[in-house]
Length: 481
Image (tube, rainbow, N blue to C red):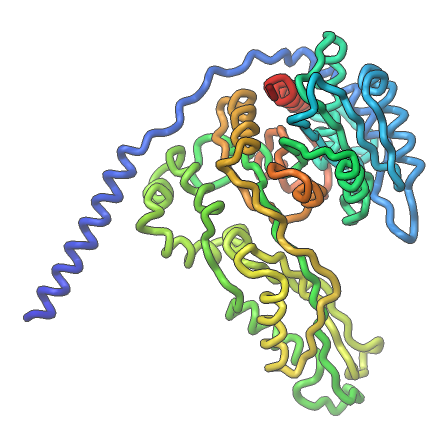
C-alpha cells in the first residue's frame, strides 16, 4: 500500500508541475510590435541597378592553383564609380590578395565601428541556373546572381549607407571602417592581414558587424514572427583522416574485415550511437526563450518552460533534426572516401575524411580523442589534417551586443532578436582578437527557401532588401554616440 501512496504522490506532484507550466505559458506575454518604419522603397530600382554592376563582376574565390586577382581589382574600380563619395572621403588600405579596408574618420576615435563582409563568391555552374549567375538579372522585384545573398548585398548596404550620409554632409561621431576580404570562401588570409593592420594601428573596435544570422521567417516550428538571429560565436572545425590498412588482394577471394568494411562499420557505429557530448548551453537556451512568447501550441508550452523541459528537449531535439543536433553538439560528417584504383582489387589501404564542427562544450582535442578511441575498436588509424577552435563567445549582456540588438529592433520592428551559434565559419572570427563584440548579422530578410539558395542555384535577393540593409547601416552609424 505504501508504494501506491508514493506513486500517487509522485503523480500528483507531476500534475502540479505540468499545471504550473500551463499557467506560466498562459501568462507569457509576446513582445509588442513596434511601429513599422516608413522606408522609401522607390529607391529599390535604383539600388538594384547599382548592385547589378557588382554582381556582374565574377569575383570567385581564388586558391593557390589559380588566382583571380584581376576580377577583384575590376570590382573595386566598379565600386569607385558607384560610391564616389566613399572613395573620395575615406582613407584606403589594400592588402596582398586585394582585400581592402577604408577608414572614415569620425569626431573621436574611442568607439570605432567596423562594418565588414567579403566580396568573393563560390563558383556557379551556368547550366543549373534560370539566368546567367553573373548577369544580375532583375525579375519581379528580385535580383539574381552569385553573391546576391553571400554576401555582396551587405557590402552594397554599408557602402550605399556611407555614400548617402557623406552626400548629406554627415560626419560620424566615431571612426567607421569598411572591410572586405577576397578569400573568405576559401578560408584565406585577407581578414587576418586586415586585423593585423588594425592591431598595429591600435584600433580596438567597439563593435564589428560581419555577415551571419539574418532576419529569418519560419525559423522555428509555429513561430509567428521573424527572428533576427545574431551570431555570437562560431563552432570550431576539424578534418580527421581515418585510415584502414590490410594486405590487399584480389576481389575473387575476399577476406572479412577489409579496409572499406572496417571504415563502414566505424561510420555505422557513429551514425547509430552518437558518441559526443550533448548539452544545451545558455546561449542556445536563450534562442528558445526568446522565441517562446511568439510560438503556438505544444511548442510554446515546452519552450516557455525550459525550467521543466530543458532536459527533455536536450534529448529529443538532436533526434528531430540535424539543426537540433548542430545546436547542441559537435557534429560529424563523413565527406570523402578512397579505396583501391581498380574495381577488382581489395585496397591495401583505404581512407575517409570526417569533418567535425566542434561545439564549445567539446573542443577539437577532446572530440578527436573520442573519434580516435572508436577508430581503434575497428583497427583504424586517426589523424588530424586541419583544425580551428571555436571562436570567443560574445557576452549578450555586453554593450556591443545590446547596441546592435537595439538597432535591429529599430530597423526591423516586426522581428524578435536572439543570439545564435554560427554553424559555419566567417571572417569575423579573426576580429574576436581585437574586439569584445565581433558579431555576425546580415540585415536581410529571408525564409528557409531563400536560405537554401546560399551557395545554391538561382541565388537571389529581393530588391526591397537593399533599401532595408542600407537603412540598417545608416542607423548603426548614426546612433553610435
